[in-house]
Image 1 (cartoon, one colour):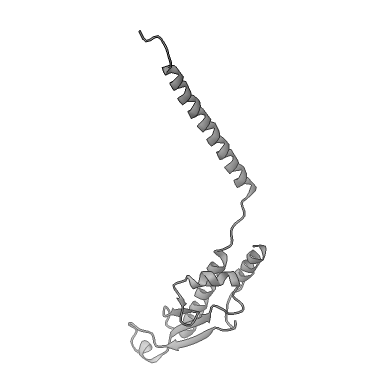
Image 2 (cartoon, rainbow, N blue to C red):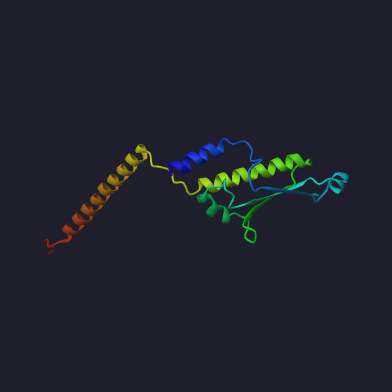
Length: 153
């Protein structure tokens, strides 16, 4: 777990994933309104990254397969961006999406350690529950003792 936490912290500091191995970029014309820019310029960016890329940690691959961006036939992640009018901004958007997707997938299986304050709080709650339960049992016992053989006549 310590190694996984260290990898996640190091990966958070990475500003861009450009130049990492296995990532393919494709460009096409965007759809929708936009006039001549849409008809003439290939601004839509499509990014394909294999899930078995060597820079993706083993524990994150299981989470990536669960993603809606996972393509089972090619065992890869497929991301597209048509948000911006320029191709370079759409490429940057795709790489940002990939970074956040891998960061989420690699962080998901890591369990956080319980703090000493939290452990003390849980112990206090368990103790308080035992005291409350004992009080309820004593009260119920007293009610039943009050019903036993008295002079009713």
